[in-house]
Image (cartoon, rainbow, N blue to C red; front, side):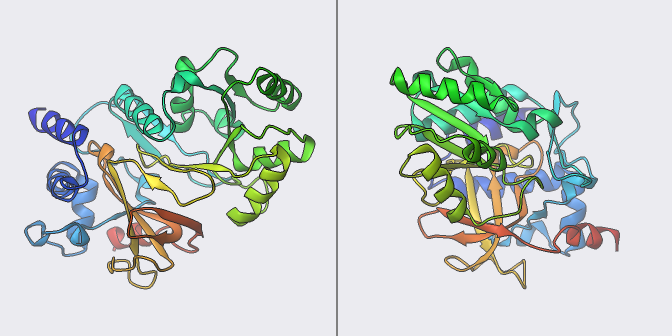
Length: 328
């Protein structure tokens, strides 16, 4: 317990100059305390004593969260976040030791980008997450609604009510965020035209098998036209991460201060010298110190020198590469 408390204190105060050293400390802690991660590192024949910089840290394939309990230490979870996924797919599960710590981090990150939540009215159009339950995103937005302006709330399929309340918010000149899963925002945009130029449209989560996949630029063009806004904002998060990144005004994503995204060669996942080129995305999320902080995602994108990144799509046929290595 003292060790994890010390890590939490260090994570809470981490900055750009201390990030790499702390990430190495978390790596050694998780090698000792996380059986799944330790077995994976051993399967790679990687000796912890040889890991001297973050480029040498092994990243756990995200598919492990579908087949194993990924925990650092022996503790009882308060909650289990489960991915919404697509119909028929296996869900990822992320075990949560302390939900309040996760929620505090979400609020801190959001407010670092957008200022106090209390100033906003928030409308959340997140049907696939509401339907599935046990969603980290729903838990986060539900927490935000506790602080948001009156009239905020979730919407499942009540498009008429949402349109009415958006028009009312515009008339009352309220700072407003429409936070929606991509496919639902597109469904709403096809049914309604809401000219609300000051609205923050926050898209997240993708199509979830409900619509054909589209490139982000085309999605944003449709939404900009439907809502009369000059740009679309985006939130990057996933079940397997406790931290988020945000894209403001159509630009690249900027990660939270306790998160770093690293590019990997698509043909050699252990080659991380790929900044500025199309690559697979690895994520260091220090908020995952009780589970695994080093995640090899299935996202395709680019990472830039300033730490920002783009997401260009998904990598095909990457589902069980890491699990096969463990089994063999």
